[in-house]
Image (cartoon, rainbow, N blue to C red; front, side):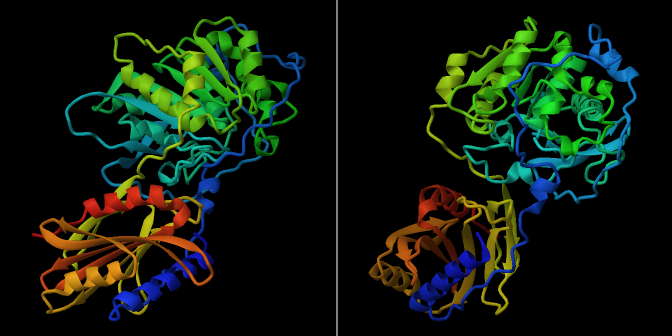
Amino acid sequence: MNKKLRRRVLVLFAAVMLTFMGACGSQKPAEDGGNDGVQNSGGKDGGAEADSGQKESLAGSAIDTSGSFAEAHDAFTTTLAREENDDYSIPDPPEGLFDLVSYSSKVGDLAAYVSSDPGDGEKHPMMIWVVGGWGNGIDDFPWCYPEWDNDQTGSAFWQEGILTMYPSFRGGCGNPGNYEALFGEVDDIVSAYEYAASLPYVDPERIYLGGHSTGGTRALLASEYTDKFRAVFCFGAVDEIKYHNNTQFTFDLDNEDEYVMRSPIYWLDNIKSPTFLIEGRDGNSANLERMMEASDNDSLHGYVIEGADHFSTLAPLTRVVAGKILEDTGAEPAISITQEELDEAMKQEPYVPAPAMTMRHLDELGLSFSCPYLWELSENEDGSGLSIYSRYEEENPWDMSALYITVYSSDDPSELQNFGGNMEAQGFEINEISIGGHDAIDAAAASRGDDGTAYYQRYVSVQNGTDYIDFNFITFEDYAEEADVLFQKVIDSIVFDS
């Protein structure tokens, strides 16, 4: 929500408070910090540049592509034309959902987010997901809003209960080394596998690999390098690195060998793990089709989705992949995907799962509640209460909603009923509820600001002795249906200290 829109909400909120609760002051959140981290650390990817031309010959290359990619890769020394890296900070992950760890690699220890131990003593499957873009770092991107037409988060896996690892790579987020643009990063993916396989709660025989765009190409190269992964899923990979954005190339651009060592099409016969290429017709489908034409490897499977682009396949089809992983429980890989079931999945109604949540404890109020991990809490400058809202300004229910908490005292035993009556008179739908054994009023209504902007408001007032704690949820009317599900999760999570 941009700052102007936030001020609109606050003006409306102040008006509502003056109408219903004269004792409560207006709210004003702190300045929002923007959304640069996603792009800087490797989040949202603009996609590869597709080309319909035929694969060029190996003129000028001394690389023998008829043998082992792993041997050729290990014997090759890349020459970097420029040394690039970054020192972007890594946000702490949602506690209990993911851990921030380091894994050993050829260049040193690299950072990763890894699903927390479920604590059930069992061994579980894990997906290693490589995000798109050219950044080699990690940030809070996995917990951002997963847009249905562009969900690059890979969150479908952990939302479905599959352990997930998001590795960073050499040169990213203060890691040792430099960006190598699809060369050394392959080694890092293999190192990520070794770390995952060492975890006591991960089944080393059921570690999967997936990625999108640049991440999909990295995953495909890793599948050509090693057969350790149970199966590999590549969304929007390219056949030759030249179809990626060459402004990101850090290697010697005059050396044909550098291109060959980074281009999956020359090494497709090396694939042994079941590997699935998926792309929308309007994305890099020409790259996918060239790879399928170039190889008769039975371990390679390709699917072009008509009417889709480089991004729109992700939300529906990562959920299909998650389902396949959960069903793949035998001694040997048994994942089968048909074009028909992918096409059918693309027809489903869009939906968005609940965000990653985190518990907040308010000592002064003696209560805890859960809210989206990306919502930040700040005290109002006038001391009237707390403002809780997303650090980002994207146009979606998570980022365009806010929660305001205020507290006041009253000795009137009918205060709650009077409040409910007043709200009902103003057009709110009223329900008397109980929260942890405490009486409460749950009021909801659509409203309109002075400038005509339509809002949806959910207002819950909870009695705790002579104190009344008010949770005021507000969003734009266009997001009411999805936001209300989120609001209800917050309400259901409220717990008072004993």
